[in-house]
Length: 117
Length: 116
Image 1 (tube, rainbow over the protein chains, first blue to last red):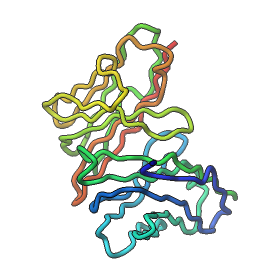
Image 2 (image 1 turned 90 degrees about the vertical axis):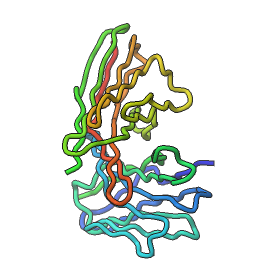
Image 3 (image 1 turned 45 degrees about the horizontal axis):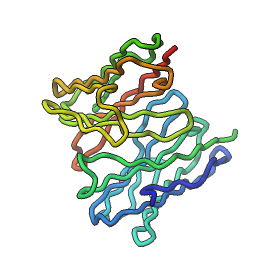
């Protein structure tokens, strides 16, 4: 089974509107971390937000927030007030503490977000 | 802070030659660095985990003799693609681990390799 699932092939959003990018995960490890990265066309991976499995609150970083539903094993990224510069590929990733050796990340397939003016 | 650089940013080489890619953590020490490969419109595929002072740990299916990794210092890891062939053309990205209370990976800008 895939550890990280991102099924939305491509998303479109109007500038200034909010958008939710879906991510579900699969793990039996009680301790894990979830990450979201943005990859613009230039290629660099930009860290957006982190959620630990034991965190009580949903993570927020500026316009980014993570809708963490542990029981459903989902960690959706919400981008508020979309900007044209948000157009990029977005990756969800997970690190498992006990089953993931050397802190390696497992990435989803990614979602392409296009922001329309 | 936590900046990772890669050099070169792009390289074109002839088939059969070797290419070295450097990954440096500029303002922090990284015991662990990671090397990824990414094909167009696809996800990152972990190739190997590089630990300072020890041998790299390769993922299943990655040829150790073809992709040589050296982590000689706490700020530098190198990936050498030996006897490169056109199928090795790809985007190679490194990351360095930094402890912020949780271990976060900071990524380099990537190196685009084209083998003719």
